[in-house]
Length: 418
Image 1 (cartoon, rainbow, N blue to C red):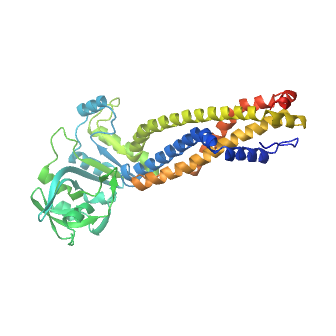
Image 2 (spheres, rainbow, N blue to C red):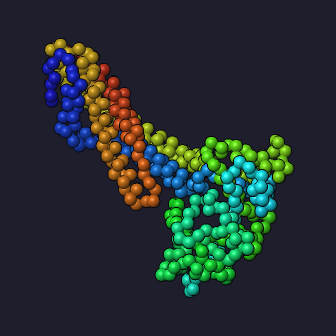
Image 3 (spheres, rainbow, N blue to C red):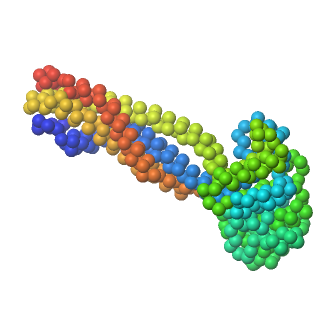
């Protein structure tokens, strides 16, 4: 064992001694650090998943388009009781509601409408089932996140004359028109012929569910063919776009007042409709995923405590093994605080090494998850610093008792130890 003969103890010497001890007893060192490694790996893994999932949900799930919100029959409801109450209270959104808002919502830049159903589409001998067929107003191209890649979107003349035209997603093109130009081709929807006038940019999938299997029609055409649905249906959704985030509250409040006025609601009654925005979806997501993250942090804490206890036991064993060395150092003038600092630094270094190894393991894990799943993994630098700092702090905390025990050894009795 390395003996330090100088009166004072430099941090570098203590750290070097700790690293030498780890190298000398590799298996014991690994078992000592295992709890800390698992804890740090879990901590960074959880933070990376949370950050990645938050980004994923914000970009793919809660992305309704820039500066937009939707008015629908139901808002974000998280329990059966509230849903049944809303079902009793809320009437479906109608075209009359849309026209009412469109002519009165002065603060909005755009007010559009969308309705949808699932239908079969066909081209030639190929057919696709469970395709999202949606009726839209022409200005939904400025509200929704869909962008035109080829051709054009639904136009005002299409809407006014209830034209049989369609704007389709890339899944429709890939599966029904793989070898031909889709623009001008005929698409059969429930047996009715529609001319394809445009193709959207590829959106991708959300949790494995494609967002490109849709067909957009003029809302006037859609309602002429399928109607607004039964009274217990949700009805249309009204999309509202505003100029900048700074006016969001004013636009939302004006829309709420107009809808409550139209529904003739009293001041103390809850809204008989729902307003859905990206922030609401993200808040719901954070509530759901926040509980899982908290549970993972709790597991991490358990591993840290276990790892700290193991480090404390190893340091106690180290004090016993190095009793004679401690006696020599004290006889040469080392003070209690020198001995205390030596063992505290060793405990901290051991824990820090475990933290660094945990960071490396977490990096490998996040790379594996990112390569095998569609979820982006994002590891903030602050998470790495936090994990190593927490690991080091655990080593310091659990190293206090062994360090104090070493510092209080009687030098004469320590010199007699073998």
